[in-house]
Length: 361
Image (cartoon, rainbow, N blue to C red; front, side, top):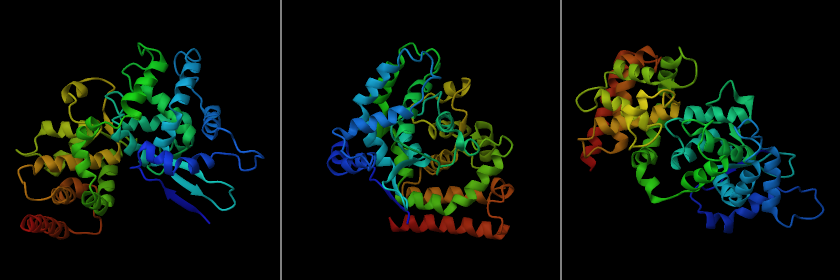
């Protein structure tokens, strides 16, 4: 029998310590040992540290002992962050459960903590984990790809270095870069972060998620069609602009400049200088599929901003139907079994839904 359960991502650190920490640490202990560990947290840390490989990071091993001490100091909180985003797997014949975090959950964690930087977007972050485990190199952006606690901790160290403009010349010791990264991002749950992601929070509401789910297959076909030349599993700025151009979504309410802005904001957050980023080399140049979905959601909220009655999910539904019925959607065979009349019916249903939403308010 196989059992998989997910922890609650809303648990605070103190709540986790009181309700879930013991089970989490027990799952990392050796059940065949005669004596229970006096300090399960430290035993878990030692097990993880033995699996971590950082020898390719510049300056190794001069900073290694400092990084080890820093990780141990914050290991309890890192375990909390990992466990509330991870799943507990219990397979038949196994004496203890195993914990793993999917790449999809890691994306959620990264966006919440504003980890992507102008030089390290999610498309590049996915590739970081290929240094840790190369088994997924054929499908590095698969959201179901999973990793364990040791891989998560190693990934945090690597990200603290790689999110800088020049990872080989940090201008500070690796231990300082890691400490700053932990305090400002990984372990930071400040209200400032919540406010910075207001639009993302709207698009993550249950009704908007339902709209995305209803259109997932069509959107994946469009994404795959426009990225098949690059064959990287990511969408470039030029490919994104081509989608918008062929879908005829640009007008007075959603202009070409805003096409660039949503491309950047889907990867980072509001407040970044869009033109400066896009003019730089080696910066936010590609987005993964979930960011493609978010960019379309941001476009819908901008395009229909003057409509103060229709809810966000109605605006999102309208824009996605427009995209699917447009030349971009037709070229992608987004709805291969439907005719042009069916697409027009879909558009009429979407607009009728918006009108019903408006009347219900």
